[in-house]
Length: 277
Image (cartoon, rainbow, N blue to C red; front, side, top):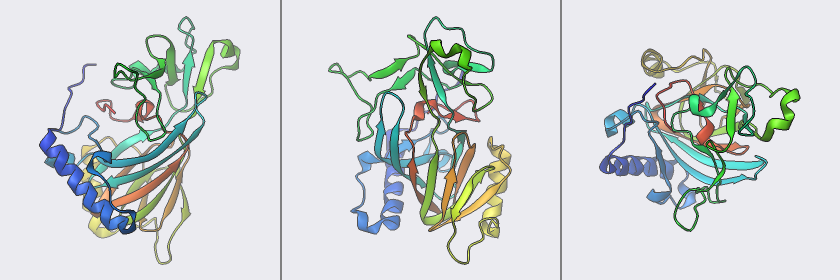
C-alpha cells in the first residue's frame, strides 16, 4: 500500500515548538525551560499545517536513551500535548532479529510490512540522538536489508524455541510509566494500571467538558481501545509492553513524564497504517 507523505513546513514547525516550550515552562518552572532545538515535533505523517498538527501530533524532549546491543537499558522523556491534540494509538511490541536466511515462523511478519519507512534498528547516543558515522550517515545495529527483523503479527508473542538458532537478538517491547505534571487529558488504554491518584480525583470519570473532544477523536481517528482514564496533575499510570494506547490533551493541554525501559521509536506499532514515525 502506497502512503502519501505529509510534511509540516518549517514556519509551522517553529510555531509548534514555541507552543510546546510555553507549556513546558508552565509545567516545569524550575527546570530552566527548554531550548527549541531539543523539542521533537512528531507529526506522524498526519499534518501539513499547524492547524492540522494541533489535532494530531506530539511534542517531546527525550532526556536520555540508554540501550545496549542486547536491548537493555532505560529511557526518560517529557511528553507534551497541545489542547485537544491526540497522540495516536500505538503499542510497543517485542522485536526479533533473525538471520537473513531464516524462515519466518507462522504468526510473525517482517517489520517493513508493518511499519512505514522501517529500515532497521538504529544505534543511539546517550543524549538520545541517533549515532552517526564520519560521513554523516545513521549507524544501525541491524539493518533490514541484512537481517530479517520481525514482530508478531497480532501483538506480543514469544518466538518459537525450536527456531532459537535463527535468532540474532531480541529487543523487548517498552513498558512505561506516565506521570502527569501539568494540565489534564484522557488516556485510552484497556490494560493500563493506575498506580497513584491524587485525593479527590476519580480516573474513571471523564469531565463533561472533555467528552465532545473524545467523541470527535473516536469518530475521526483509529482508536480501538474502549477504556478511558482521566489523567490530571500528579497521577501515575503504568503501561506494560504491548499495551495499545493513545492520549488526548485536555483544554489546557497536558505535560507528562515518561519513565520506561529502552525506547525504540522506529519499531512502534501504530493502529493507523498511514503513520510514519
